[in-house]
Length: 500
Image (cartoon, rainbow, N blue to C red; front, side):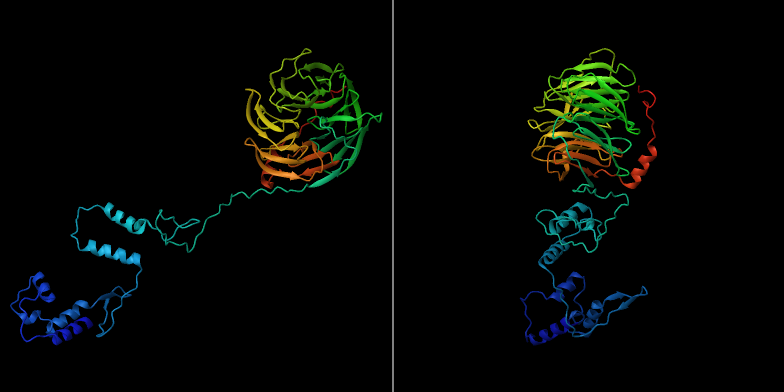
């Protein structure tokens, strides 16, 4: 009512003796004409009358809902100040737009698409779709050119129970063993880990056994002549017999439980650099470039000879299913041979000549028996993964240094490479992308050989610094490990009664 009182006072002050004939129509007269009222009773339309003031008072009273659902009147206080809220520029623009649109006639056929377009133009987002509570990491992003005034007051991201923790790979070895008098020869294979958790290591002319369960060390054998030395060692799958290749062209077979030599097989004309088992067949590679198959069950053990390499055979591996034999040599060649058949010669299945250095590092994939990984020496430095059935190269990678050994880690489906000159470390690669997972440094000399523990959790490396380092990088979580142990079946050696 304060504005009406003020208007009455101003009207009294500005009242003239004579009426203004050519003045514009007063506001109250315009309202009276629009409402259809007649001018028969001018006193009823005059703002000076008490009846009009009482009518205005009733119109300005507001009805406020109470707590009990009923409405209550807001009392009028004469002379009270009017409250004008403070608004920012954006709000004033929106208000001006809405006022201008409010004076236009309402089109009942108008679509809601125009209203959404107005909201997008003014706010940068649809008000109807704006969320007060949003489950997420960040607020909703505003379109380009607009400012986002939404802020996150509280957010909660549910974490599933099955979320896997990040895997930790230790950069230091789990254990270090001393290996004195180790021969620093790239072409020899001087270490192997049995299924009975025994680690066989060749140190010059002796073979030592380290029991990884108890920690005991046993001297298995020693050659008679000081100038002779051990060139290769290899365990049979059951882990109770050890094959040993020597520099005097022989292949010895030892019963480790009784520490007794069972056989001394002679068929090569040069040192035996590599060995590999396939059930009762023992294959041996020599510096004479020949590969011999030995059937250890019969007296005439030499059953077949493979010829193809032109220099020393330094890598030899049977596939997990026993169908293929892979061989690598100092002639930079990789050959894939079929299983043992009758006769003295066998035709090669595949040959690969893309390596530019000696190929000693060979590894078959345990979960894909037709996949072969090979690594080249100093002049090559490449890891190549091939499908031996099709002969195609799946992937190839240039590494920092020569590759002396390759091992597949089935627990995490990874590939480990032993690096030689210039790197002196182990590198874990993701298969088959060959992206680096981790690098294990610590050796002070080039890595010569690697082997995997029977539970596939630890890789052992032997290097020119005369140390053996055990890296526990592939240990499974307890639940997966227990399930795997339940599936493992105990096996007995098929050769326990067959070797003569």
